[in-house]
Length: 226
Ligand code: CDP
Image (cartoon, rainbow, N blue to C red; front, side):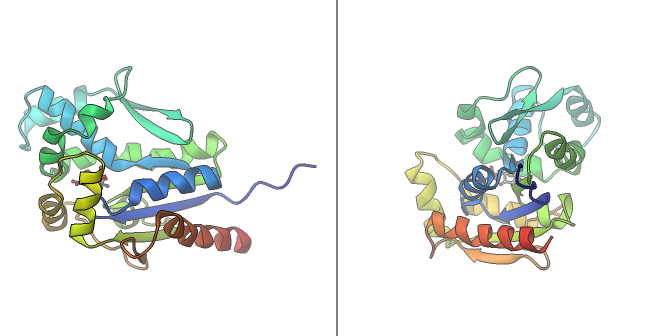
């Protein structure tokens, strides 16, 4: 007889730039058979596409039209949800390039941009269920506070800014971490916050396997209780 499938679990991971969200979420997704949704990559993709179209970061009809014209959908690649604009995902090189690093938090601060992505991001939960995943691990800045306020588990990752900047340099990326954190925290629309009730994890003092194990313990406790 097959073992009973574990209860469906939604995990929200928020935190500042280079706080370790993606590596943690990736590790959890394969270990616990969760769909990994990286919402930062959604804002990065939109920023790249809007800049390519020459759309400045200003609210108004032109932005609304540009956003309505973007044919957004998604496909699953192993455990990862990949955002598609048209047939193809935006190339990694463009998503993580200097131009997007510099502009993404300015576009992400616009309510129309956030509005365009919110329903899609929430839709990943029923989608993961239908696709037979045991849950979703979604990472970003406003997951536990706005996108999935009823998530079963909520975490907030943090680390010293120098440590985070060093991580980006080690990845070979030029990034403006302090500027992005400031813009993300100060904006009016869905700012970066530690959601109420979230567990804070300092990723500077722990190794990646230790961070994954800490969140993993909570997932296992959730599964035992449910
Ligand atoms: O990987 P890293 O931590 O550097 O950033 P990211 O998760 O790829 O997010 C890039 C940018 O998207 C952030 O600096 C925010 O401006 C924006 N973002 C957001 O506003 N809300 C989210 N839920 C996720 C990302």
